[in-house]
Image (cartoon, rainbow, N blue to C red; front, side, top):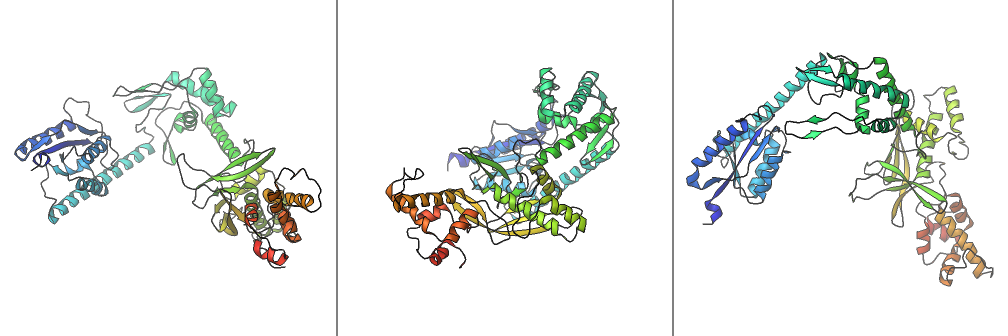
Length: 540
C-alpha cells in the first residue's frame, strides 16, 4: 500500500457571502474551520490529516466559481496536493448545480472527494446522489430568492429616493446612510459642470483640472488599501457629468427618481451639460470632428459579425482606403479587408434609390430626395451629391446595418417615418488578391459602377508600351527597365479583345479578373471569343 493511500490530506474550505462580521476576533469562517478541523481529527484513525493551507473566501457569493480561494483549492487538487475537501455544508462549496457538476468532475479526474461535516450522505449510491442534488437545488433556490428579495428592496428604496450604498459620490459624505453635501468637494463639482458647459469638451476639461491640480477623492478601505487621489480621467469625468445624483435624484437602471438628498447644482445647468453631450455624440456619429471621416464606420460588419473599421494605405501620393475587421490583440482569426470606395458607393446608392422610388414617400418628398442625391437612373447612379456628413446622417436616421457575407451584401435600414425594416441583398464575390481576401461587387446586380482596378490599368498600359518596344521598336521609359521575358508576358495583354480592355478601363470586368490571375495564365487565346470565355465575360 502506497503512502498516498494511507494518508488523506484534507483541505478545509470556508466561505461567507458578505464581509459583515469578518473583522471580529472569532467570525463565521473561524466557526466553520473549527467544526471541520474537529471532524478531520475524529477521522485520524483513517489517516486523515489537515493541510496547513487556509482556503477562505470571505465576502464571496456561492453563485459563482470565480472565487480566489476556491480557484487555488481546485488548482491544488489538480496538482495532487489535496485528497479530500472538507466543508461545513455543501452550500459553502457552491450554490449552483452546474458549478457543482464541474467541481465533482475535477475531483473525479484527480481521485479526490469532498465531505460535508453536517450533512451525512454517501454519494457512491443513487440515493446519496439524489439527496445531494436535492440539497443543492434548495441551496440554489435560496440564493435566487434572496437575490430577488434584495433587488426588490433596492428598487423600492430607490423609488423613495434613498441612497442604497456603493461608492460615495464625489461631493457628498455619508452619515447614517444619508448623503450630506461636502461643501469643499461641492465647490469643485459646480466648477466642473460650469466649465464643461463653456468648453463643451471632456478632454480639454481633463487637462484644465490637471493643470489646477484638482484630484479625485482618496479612499481608504478596511484592508488598508488606498485608492483615488489622482487627476480626473476622461471616463471618470464623463460619468460624473452625467450623474443625476448632483441634481438631487437617484438612478435605478433606466429610471430616475427624486432623491432624499440635497442637490449640488441646478437642473438648468445639468440639462445644458446633457444637451452638450447629446450634441457631441451626434457630431461624433456623423464624423463632424474627424479629419477624414469614413461613410460606413459603425455600420458595417464582416461575415463573422465582427465590426469593420476604416484603414488606409499610401503608395506614393495616392491613398487607398479599406474597411478591415476590428479584432482584439492576439486574435489569430482571419481579417476581412474591403475596398472602401465600392462598398460605400453601393450602400449609399442602394438606399438613395430605394428612398427616391419608395411608394411610401409622397411625390414632393420623392422629388426632394432625388434632387438631394443627384440620381440618374437612365444610365448609372453617380455618387450622391452630398457631403460625407450628410450621407452618414442619412444612414444614421435610417438605422442602417451592412452585413458582408461570402456571396452577398445584406443592407438593412428603416426608411424615415416608417417602422418597417427594409432588407436588400446584393450579389458579391470573394476574390483573392495576393495575400488579401477582398469583396468584389458583381456588375450585373444593378447599375453600380465600380472603381477601376489600378493593378489591371497599370498592366494594360505596360502591355501597350511593351508592344511598342517589341513590335515597333519604339523605346518606352515605362518598360525599358524590364527584362525581355517579362516584356513578352506583358505584350500578350495588348492583343486582348477591345471590349475586354474597355471593361477593365471602366471597372466593369468580372470581379475575379485580377492582375495576378492574368499574369499567371500561360497561354491567352488569340481569338476574342476564347478570351471572353477564359476571363469570364459573357459571349458577344
